Image (cartoon, rainbow, N blue to C red; front, side, top):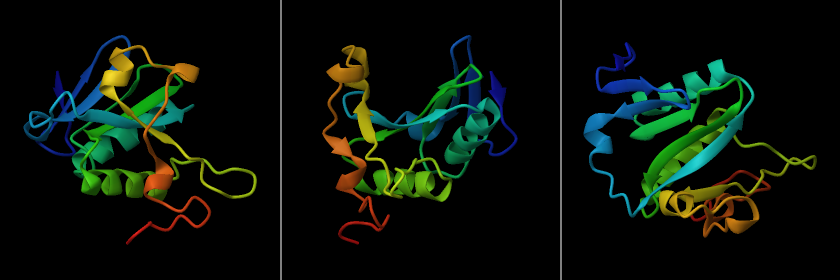
Amino acid sequence: MEVCGVAKLLKKVSNAYWVYYVNEAEAKKFDDSKVGKWMYFFKDNDFAAKICEKAVADGVVAEAKHSNAPDGVCCFYLHFDDKEAHKRCITYFLENGLIRKTKAGKLYNISFKLDDQTRNGEYGDGFVSEIKLDNFVNLETGEWIGG
């Protein structure tokens, strides 16, 4: 276990597959039945480490992780019913260029995935998200829907 210098509340833990960044006090409040994640697929592990660590250190999310590989996925965890947490996380994604755009310049309609869906083996075509970026943001303009 390693405590990062960015914030005393931030704990970094790694294994062969994942590197976790956790604000333990906030993560203890998670209700496992309500937790899910916004995901970012990366090709630069150093960048992934920086954005995950910063998201937790800055209070965007209580927990984030990334694949312990040169490329993979970052996961940013929050409760599915916490609208303010979605707004913080999506804003962070937008500010850091974590949402790709189509050739026409429109944001991809990325999905929020519940941990229960992951535990149930819902991947690829078997995964259907009820929460998507277009629930919060106009994909063409990047503006928030409803303020």
